[in-house]
Image (cartoon, rainbow, N blue to C red; front, side, top):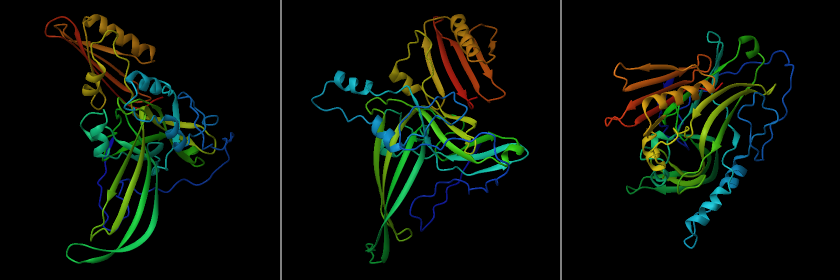
Length: 374
């Protein structure tokens, strides 16, 4: 479900409003749980098991340490492309990491028997969007800020061209953020990502929710695994704040929000909010550059010389191996096929449109997936 959040500009704010609903009252304490979670460890970089159901042996990675571990210095003018690629390849990119999220606002819905939470998706800064290999639209790659700190540097007297004087508040803001590869489940900038955590009311009385962003890192062509950005907001009469924002970004592949009980360590839900590149059909003609241009939001377009029957069987078997029950619909002329699979429990929704090329030789594939993980 997509919930549109209206952003109101506050005249005297230090930083822009983030459009997130007000934090709801959290449940009180109840009976003690049977299990007790280990303290969350911060300040390390250690991969997590994406299939884990108990956040005990999977410490939270410190963003600063993870950023430095994934940071690759830019290509030197005297360095060959092969040498630079070797440095990139030395970074382990297949692992998943967990970073703590500032608690998103949430409230319990007794009728739905679960928590409703909202995660704000921000816009990718224009300079970074232009120089990165993401495509031209900033809104297609929302930014999840995992930590923001503001430091005051006092005040000074300023005036505009008309001689109007004002006391200016000077701040610096530091942001640590993760950029989603391909947003799903409502992950568009300017829209809050709706999260639902199913928890029976009996357990909710004693649960204490916490949220993690769990993601794989992914290399961006010409960028590596990280990026930085600096923005300056000059003071005005209506908003006399002098703000410099320093941002650090990590590029993600697959990404999910994990909701877990801090008392027991039990993972209560894994809500998928970003997708990496899905497996291409073997022999597909789509190049990496074409994939970048075609993979808008959660769609992937591929072209293969193989016939409709072979492609249909491949995706049907693939979804079956992933525990889904695919349904296939063919048009009477046998030129179009739609393979769908919906998991009623996790709400994972896969739709694959197969079209026979007009030449009659080969198949076009459009892959779309939304939903949450088990």
